[in-house]
Image (cartoon, rainbow, N blue to C red; front, side, top):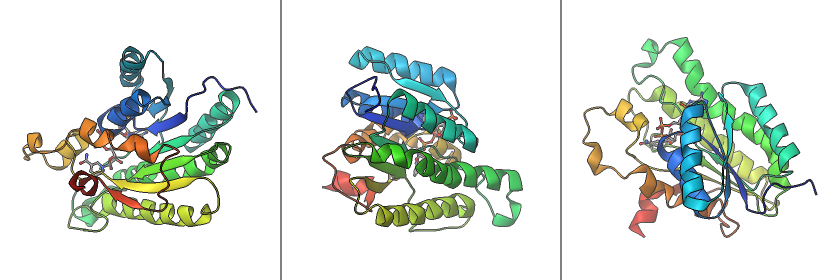
Amino acid sequence: MAPSATDRRLILVTGASRGIGRAAALALAKAGNHVIATARSEKALTKLDDEIKAATGHNATLIPLDLRDMTGIDRLASALLERFGRLDGLLGNAGVLGTLGPLETISPQSFQETLDVNFTANWRLIRSVHPLLRMSEAGRALFITTGIVPRPRAYWGVYGATKAALETMIACYADEIEKTPIRVNLFDPGAVRTEMRFKAMPGEDQSTLPSPDDVAATIPFYLSPECEFHGERVVFQDIVKR
Ligand SMILES: NC(=O)c1ccc[n+]([C@@H]2O[C@H](COP(=O)([O-])OP(=O)(O)OC[C@H]3O[C@@H](n4cnc5c(N)ncnc54)[C@H](OP(=O)(O)O)[C@@H]3O)[C@@H](O)[C@H]2O)c1
């Protein structure tokens, strides 16, 4: 086996610089995992690393990357192979809202960015890290989706469509890897008190919403060997009701 820098489970978190991804990275580290954190903001990743170190005594691995850089994703996977020889979990969390509005008013640039970050980058991640997840005894992947998919509505067309594409892709991926030890699921967090939600609903009283920490507390289970769910669409509000 290739030399491993850690005996802890290695979990790659995209969009770890703020919001749900940041809170999930912290929760995963506190649950005993080695977090590999990626996002564009190097400064925010360094701050996350400081917090993880203070809480657990361990550092994270930081990989600043724009997920629209598809060959950058391939390089990330090569670096993980070289350094760790496997990957135990992938949290595909990074996302952008893009522009909310009538479809005919959306700029091609905004459309492309939303598609690239919310959908294409997740396909590219699967393409490049699937072999690493196969090298784990219990590879797990969880992709963050949205309630807009089952309940489409006006002005959310581009964002909703990119997440619908993600959901279909993950359902197909789950079917493809059924006979492997990898388990893959979708996670719908509902409305959460983050920058993205504020951008979407600026007039809303954010204090009524769950915090990223509330949501993140439920995520480590789905990236652990104990999780045997596969091909499920997990809804945060349903977990809370149980
Ligand atoms: N908040 C909600 O109410 C809600 C509801 C349903 C679903 N979701 C989903 O939950 C996930 C997290 O959302 P959030 O609310 O936590 O959003 P957020 O606070 O805006 O955080 C988004 C994260 O994605 C990263 N990101 C964006 N563009 C990127 C790019 N080009 N390359 C690399 N990373 C990029 C950002 O990092 P950098 O800017 O540093 O790159 C940031 O860490 C998203 O997939 C979102 O669609 C959120």
